[in-house]
Length: 191
Image 1 (tube, helix red, strand yellow):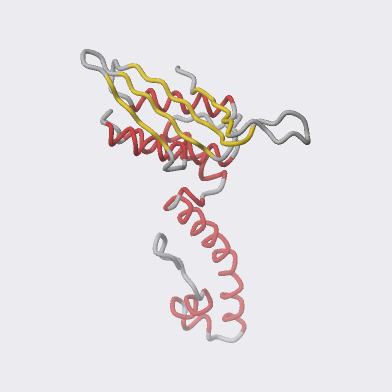
Image 2 (cartoon, one colour; image 1 turned 120 degrees about the vertical axis):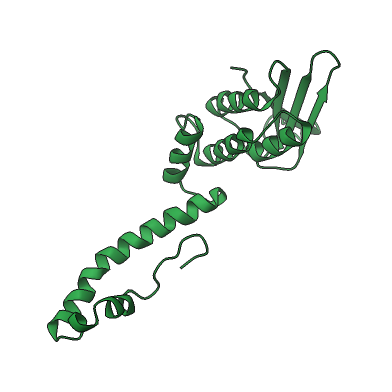
């Protein structure tokens, strides 16, 4: 049993409580409890899906693909980690009204880190600049899908630029010491 789904912990006790006379009638008891094992296994699968829906940070691919379809995110060409970030970011984008706080929440959810910067500048027309350091190398599909999510989050009619960085050291050959703190930058693609 969990706080997100009220499952049944003891199926044998449950069957005895629901069918007391049948379960205590000789062979009927063992037969009734044996029939309940199929239902118990299905119940565990349903409970697992309910837990994953309650916390997308631990959700598996099946639940993430369903949530991606719900939020209009394409799940093709992305890893499970990328899909998780896209789904959580798309959910945050639905609540975004284009303010700096909403953009910050969406951007941290989309990138999965708090090492982000969100700047909105402009007097007559707004322009938003988003930057983040992420822990994985993004695929082209993630960059496209993330660009669509950011476009949904910024204020209507405003321009935006978003870039993610992967930290690392630029190396010249296998034994060279490297050129200091180099970062690999990936701009998000605008739809």
